Length: 230
Image (cartoon, rainbow, N blue to C red; front, side, top):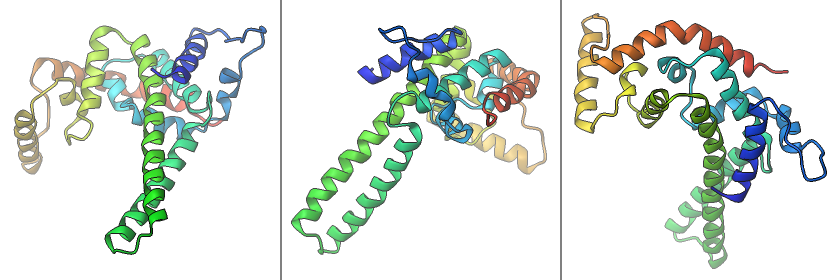
């Protein structure tokens, strides 16, 4: 954990506990005071980057109060330090385009020595922006870990690890090898083609599906309420 991430996590812990972080002079810290500057869209992007989504939180049985605290963590992490998460996203996009342009120029044999140097600088800036985004996402993961029990944490991070797998969220609470994911996708595809319901039958996935159906309305309401523009 970087020093900036550690410092921000202290302010984050104070805010989630309902307190107010202060500096050595006893003044309210801007790390908490500035959190209102983060936009709902920005905080939502960070939550999704961290693997924390409304569907995932519903599948692990999160309460509305837990969802609100986790969303608050994202709002604070977006703007509690400089650069903000929005700044990091913009930097990543800019440096990615620059890397692409300079790489194409080099492949075409049109790159001057200064272009090669600029490519190295742009690539380093791109990696730094992505690393800093992960630092911000780690703050959200820290808040999720602080608000969920051991089973919920295990399920949530299993879901996050399988985010690219195209199956209903309840199936993702169980860690599976690649061959099992392939078989499962085939089974789900066949069921959908036949118009059959896609219902988890194994223990944890079936339990997660029941939790999802029970919790999704409350989770969605808490999510929207916490991230509503002020």
